[in-house]
Image (cartoon, rainbow, N blue to C red):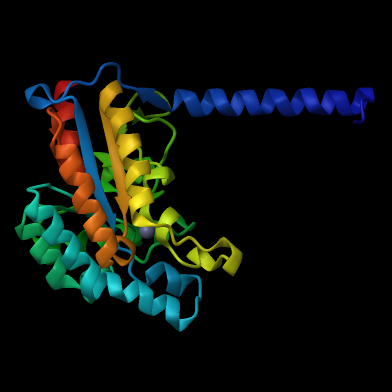
Length: 293
Ligand SMILES: [Zn+2]
């Protein structure tokens, strides 16, 4: 290791910069102490589905087999998920790219009729760097969702800027994994946006997506659903004991496969067997927290 004074100075500067960055990041997130849920529930579980189908794969210029895999989500997977949630009387949140409204409008209308929330997941699964284009994408997505299901989205899973989202009436974002509890996002304490965190450890694509994002063959993920059920069950037990919040992230093209639907069905039955488990949409969680905290 080089310990010359000049590199030590450089290291000090790096550490100071990292600490400042961490403090800044921390100041932008305010965790809510002792969240309480309606009817004395012990835990709120959000089932969320990112309705990506082939949009991201197309942006990444992936081969036709990958695109077809995504398309399964729009043709079959989304319908199986709606059926699963309906059979358990669970209200889920479907984060929907605006262009999905053109591609699979019937499934979105059916989900909305069942009381599921249709929320924003960017226009074509990306947030443009150019501010005017970003605004245009957000507005197009809002208009497309409103035209399809008759209601504007109030939440997003994206990196759209907070100010832009607030300006368009959004109340929550479900994007980062900085905490395990809902928290407020605000640089200065004013105009906060509620963050409903998720985590990749409870994300179906991390366990079941073959050749995910162009990964090579040695990085393929094709896990046994029984094994994943046990991992997720242990995670749920831990969250349930502590009380609070859990956000399960799914994709119709991943979880919509038959064996995985069966696994989710078993998992939900196990969750429902415990008292005090609430299965609302993200919007219901957000409105409750905004009202009560
Ligand atoms: Zn996505």
